[in-house]
Every structure is written in structure tokens, then in C-alpha cells.
Image (cartoon, rainbow, N blue to C red; front, side, top):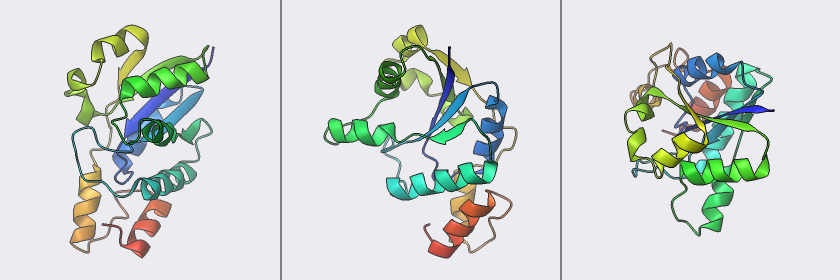
Length: 172
């Protein structure tokens, strides 16, 4: 049975905090990094396609064989004609696509305290594993955005390719 970790995040942008969480998922056959198409609680984010580009650069930098970007939220968003894409919908569709996989939804520390607010949180816990994945490095996407806004270096906050894309394109 294939063990798949589903790590959903805004990735606005990917940080070394994300890296520290992802690096603890080596026991999974596949780790899907799932950028949010729209934030559940209305948080402003960089355009989805740009965040997908950043996630792919992040994955290239990490060079972990089990890591991949998953854009399933985009497909579900289009099918729902712009309606909310829930974690429940994502996990249900992934289970439909890979019926014999064992799915684990991975929560970062920022979402752990608000998990009870997730749509069908009780049903998620009944059907799939949920894993809180603490960051060993307390670097948040907010730190990167703040540093960029102040024209400070972000080299110590994210991976090399992500840093290059962000500084060259002045996304934030």
C-alpha cells in the first residue's frame, strides 16, 4: 500500500519552516505539496500559478525523491466554478484517484489550532490519518514577505531558487 502525505499550505512563499516540516516526512512513499488555490479564511496570497512555480523551485532545491507538487485544488476549483475547495474534497478526490493509497493529511503548526474549523473535520479524522508536523525551524512565509517589503535579504529564510525568483521578480 502506497503511503501518501498530503501537505497543504498557502506556500505564500515556501520557507525554510516548510522545509523543516517536509524533511520529517521521509517515511512516506509520496509527499504531495498542495498549494491552496484560495485561502479558506480570505487571506491575500500571491497568484496561484506563481505560488506553484515557487513550490516547484522549492522541490528542485530540496532534491527529495518522494516530493511532488500537486495542483489538484486548481482542478477542483474549476469544477466548483470558483467555490471553496475544502481539505475534505481534496482528500476524497485523491482517494478516488488512488483508491488503495493510505492518505495522511499533514498540518503545519499554524493550522493545527484551527483544524476544528475545517469543513467536515470529524469526517476527515474518521477516514484518513491526520498528522501535526512541527517546524524545527521557526521561519514563516510572513517573515519572507516582511523582509522583501523592507528590502532585506531573504537568503536565510528560503531555498536558493525560491530566493532568486522572489528577488528577481519582486513578487511581494
